[in-house]
Image (cartoon, rainbow, N blue to C red):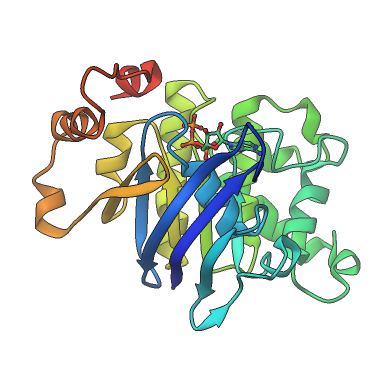
Length: 267
Ligand SMILES: Nc1ncnc2c1ncn2[C@@H]1O[C@H](COP(=O)(O)OP(=O)(O)OP(=O)(O)O)[C@@H](O)[C@H]1O
C-alpha cells in the first residue's frame, strides 16, 4: 500500500521562482492496485512519483509504504520497495556495462553481497528466460554493451530489470512515450504481464488517454498539484477517451487553452 497524506512540495521556496508543485495530495493505493496518472504539462505527475520514490523531499505531509512511514527516508532507503522505469531509456540502465551486468545489478538490489551474486550460469539462465519473453533476440546478447542497444531494446531490458528486483511497488513515468508505436505496445504488454504476475502496486504516468483507460483499475487526474478526479469501478469502465478530454476541459480556467499537444495527439 502507498499512502500520501496532505503531501506538499514547493520548489525554490522563498524565491521569485517559487513553485508549488504539489498542493495537498491525499491518496491511498491499496496493495496490488494499478493506478494510471494523467494531467496536463506541469500538473505535478513526475513530482508526485519522484516524491514517493524519495528523490524529492516533501515540504509538508507524510508518505507511508504499508504502515511504515518513509517520509524522511532517502531514495536509497526505498529501493527495496520501489522499482522504476523512466521515459528516457538511458535513465534506468548503465550504458558502459553489458546487458547481463545490468541485469545482475538489478537482481542483486537489496541483497547482501549483491555483486558476488552476479553472473553465474544459473543467473544467466534466469536472465535469458526473461529476455526471451521480449522476442527481440536479446537472450543471445547478454554480453552486448547496453549502450549499443536501440532505445526500445534498452527500455525493454529496463522493464525486465524492474521485475528482477524484490520490490512491491512499480513506478512508471511515461515509460513508453519515447518509443515507436510497435515497441510501445510490446512494452505495455510485457508491463501488464509483469504487474499481474508479481501483484505489484503500480502508478503509471501517461499522456495517452487510451492507455490511461485500458490499463489498471483506477485513474487519477492531477491539475496544478492537486488530484481533481479519481475514477474507478463502474464509473471508470463507462468512461471513454472523449470523457477524459472533457474532464481536462473542465479543469481549465475559462479561456485557458489546452496547452498539451502531446495529450491530444496521444488520445
Ligand atoms: N526541480 C525543480 N525546480 C523547480 N521547479 C520544478 C522542478 N521540478 C518540477 N518543477 C515544476 O513543478 C511543476 C510540476 O512539474 P512536473 O514535472 O511534476 O509536472 P508533470 O505533470 O510531470 O509535467 P509533464 O507532463 O510536462 O512531464 C512544473 O511547473 C515544473 O516546472
